Image (cartoon, rainbow, N blue to C red; front, top):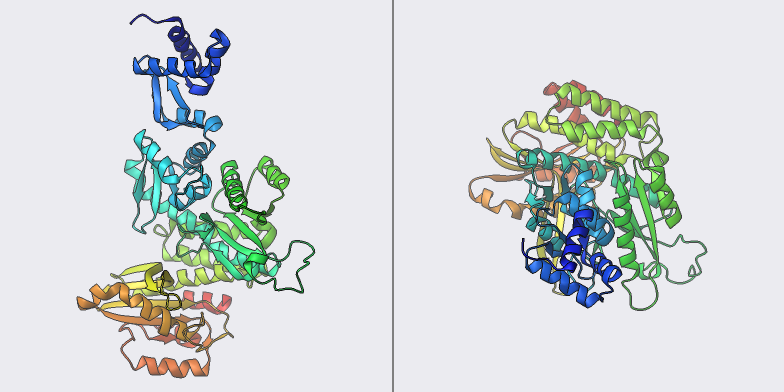
Length: 531
């Protein structure tokens, strides 16, 4: 080895002792030992790196332009970077911890939450997620991959043989969280914590996409006037600008961890500091399945509202959650008898707990699972896509700007025999409810589906239609239709929309008759008992 001066010898000894040090800490050691000023100390470090005596983490920095340094034999592995970043780059630390917590995989959406990364890169000093991923890729720690649902994931190296199953499993876990969101939002609205006119939330159709607000993502957000004495009652207090923002973090599929709280807090702080004058008001709400006492105490000290999901729905919700998890995580492995048993047990638990109205979205999801068995029977060799989402850019007629419009569809079936594209709308409602005709502007009506969302998605299948496929629709409910709706449906049935192996629409009795004809008596019994 070439001659080492006293500074280089000292530096190597320090790295031998500490393994890895950031430049700021090395400068302090040199100052304490030799009285060297910061600028000169940095030159000593730089020269040692140029000689190859020490290894630099360039281009990875650790706060205020600091690089990490190690002996040449030490590699900057995930664990070493995580160790350094815990003190010097917390955002990167949170991302690495989250990857470990989630068995080496994390969706891009969840990473946005954990890192509090902005959606669009700006001039602020906040870390941008793509930059962090780029660094992990450069150090051969992680990489990105997109699944069949077009969901982006960050995956730790070494998962090559199991990455497909990892992505499937992780998508299912995200779906578990979103299955509960609609019902949780409804409960919070009923509690008067949110005004139901401006609620945006992550939904089960797109579990990898959150609610966007102020260049950040949230599981849900809305507005409230319930913040103590409201001195603007007599004034116009309905506009969001005059209300308080409510942001939600909802995590049901696993424990709520410290990195989740830190990511949520960071997003709130960014939002609070995003105005040049005055101060934003925010009410944070956390809904969780389980968390440590330490983290719950921190949440309490921060002044956040927090709810264990059992405090909303009672302890029976854990049985419901366990069953939903089985259906989401293992549906490919379950036999029909198992699925029917799980659905019956889940609906029975909901019914016994008196939570039918509070868990309407869950019941709707279970109705979709029931009907999947039927649709698969009618189209055994077809491609059946559940919870399908389609969006496209359109021109806003009011101001001539381009906006993105999109809708969710319960099932889209692509059948080669017969050559049909069938879009299926399902409504698992109570037996006495009557679905109205409505109009194309009113959700959950006949016209909304047949005159709004069904024609909208037809654009998606122009190529298939050109290849000989025909476009069809089907509306199925466990309830009833109004007379006006029936009259309109009968007219539509005479057109070209009716599929060959299904009717255009089914009300409760028609559905029961169809299930009996096709030997689905158990499924008929489930719907008859719980819907």
